[in-house]
Length: 301
Image (cartoon, rainbow, N blue to C red; front, side, top):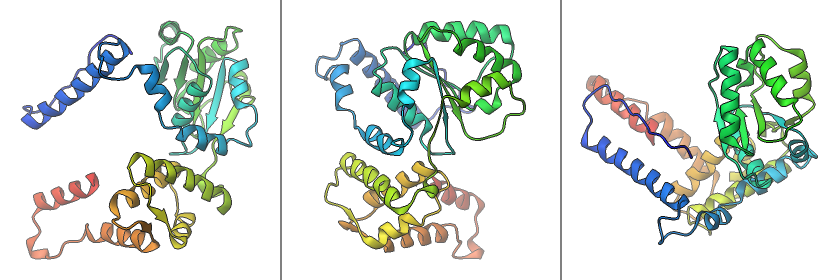
């Protein structure tokens, strides 16, 4: 969205593979820019692409937030919103959902590093406001905000002007210090994304089915289905990172299984293969470099 450059620094000489990879990134950025400025005649317009985007977030968040009445209205009527949720619960995806659902015309800006000096922060907020226009500014990890930073944001969000909106992301981490007026105001406009482990089986099955339907579509495997014992495995899985974990599990099955019916056995074999992949068959053949390469390969897979 911005006119500028990307700076990449390597500690060693750049390989031909890295050059090709950077070239692909450059081509992608150039094509996206050309698309936005209508320079690529062969591709559909950006407006058409927007209408063709998968509606997974709409359907999923409509369900997850069905009991959080009026959270979008809160953002319409006010300048800010606080989204609470544990790791992988979909806080950033919810921001995109809100951005599309309310059809904001400005830019969506994510910020995870803020100036500590108050004068610089106030100046930066002015710059972000001008850049976002009537879009959304997202402040990540608000538990890291100092007392002075919280006071600055409090003064900003209590202003009657609506554009741009500001969304704060909260991962339940306790702040070292709290500016009470700021925290009180946030608590009145907070939406909490549920932890998957807190959902009953009926609701969890709906979440699984929504994600499953979407992943089958984008991976071109419309006929693949989940067996009853696979559902039971997914119901009892200890999701540490919520939606992120669940999506990974479902996509692994779609991409890794040749069968049209995914059974619990697939996941059990997957877990066993992960454990075995870290074992060494022969202690006499314990080459450190090969062992590190094997571990890296497994992590990439």
